[in-house]
Image (cartoon, rainbow, N blue to C red):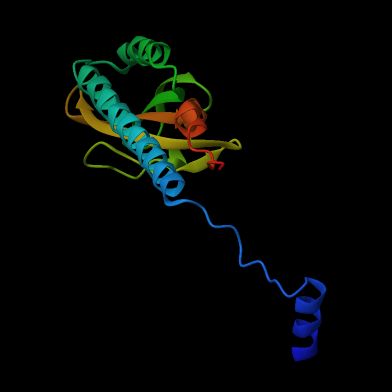
Length: 165
């Protein structure tokens, strides 16, 4: 083993490259850009939760589930970041839907407040499932759900590329 190391050092003319040293300014800049992109993602996901909670508040005014369709479709059209927007009843049946197929199995059972899942893959697309519970009619429970297409955030990640010297 020692002879192998000695032979390698001799072949390299007595020099062993210890790696490339990256200037601190470049590392600091990359860290700042990455932190800014992460902050953008957090804000975008939080804004999505707030928007969905507003949809849920609007759905509470409906006394009949047939009134949900137009609100869900309007929401999906207004916010293009979602692959699918739908409403689930307490039995996890889809009451209204706009966009791609609903995935009730990705939604927590009986959530008590608005929230988001961790990123997951649905139909080979990375999404965050956002949800907001609400009551309608004669105190029936339901959940407004939106599947946030993470590809819509690509511009936030475009700036986070390794810096070059």
